[in-house]
Image 1 (tube, rainbow, N blue to C red):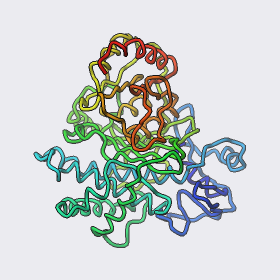
Image 2: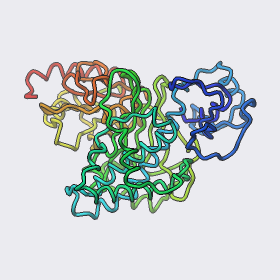
Image 3: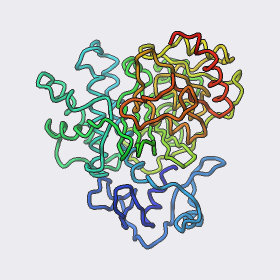
Length: 454
């Protein structure tokens, strides 16, 4: 949903998965005791909204059909709102994380110490972890927030890494100073080192089959981000082993398929010649979806000196309608460290994927399929490597709600209830724009696997 449920929530009792009912909860204003959202205006809770933005199915433009919204308030129109508040908070957190990473990317490109333990990439990853943890805890209550991620407090708390900790604290405070632009109240005073360590300490969870926790990929695609190319921030909420919402932030994602073949420097030049507006933009986006919504949404990153206002010109995205492998576009993996390119590319050739492949990094493949820029993504890990849940949870639910399919190579749903890894994953991951393509790929994997060396 395009987050217009934020205003709708002001007019109906909303039951959260937090064990209690809040009769006065307002997503967009969040008039709750521990609210982190900036209060912009107040509205009596016993009146119906007079202007609520919604997305037209025909042209994706925004309108304010009061009668339709009144029906939603009365429960006559189904609209998934179970995780409305959590989705609001998660999108804001990822927006701020992308803002942080964009500020640092010039440093990543110019740095000659990318492999150094204190590289800008390390600082960025830990800073994103801190920002996301702070926003989730501030807005949802620290007792309700547990995070699974690749970075934890032990990385920062070692005495021989005080310089790294200082850099993270400085970066975090600079980002939080911009929080009001995102509709989030900034801290009353700058965070200190002990506060940063405490905030990020909720990232020590190992995952479980019961309860709820967040899975965060703070900087997916480090190789891409280091050279000024693609990278992503992924955040998802997992409840009782199932992903219930996912958000992908892709700061350098090209909004036109043909731009994938050009280097980011060319895209920057195009952006300078045709500056983006609030409704049209050349690169960078936030993509999100909620379980059961049967829709996925995309919105631009927040422009410099602009204030964030729901729904931020969100538009619906859906997978491609192509169901012929000869016409389908394959997401070609770039990273070679933990996947078998030989088997993947051989399989793509054997099933007739003859179109020019789309070269994209890591979680960006999920975004490409959800946006209809590609139809097939396959990943088969090298022996001994285990896929991490934070690398796939957000992307999987976004593709599924956009109309696609994501399973393991046997056709089984991905299981996020077994800890940090996808322990029961059968051989690899297959994501497709529809069931027809998916069935053909799964059959081809079975036929080719015996002769592979994986």
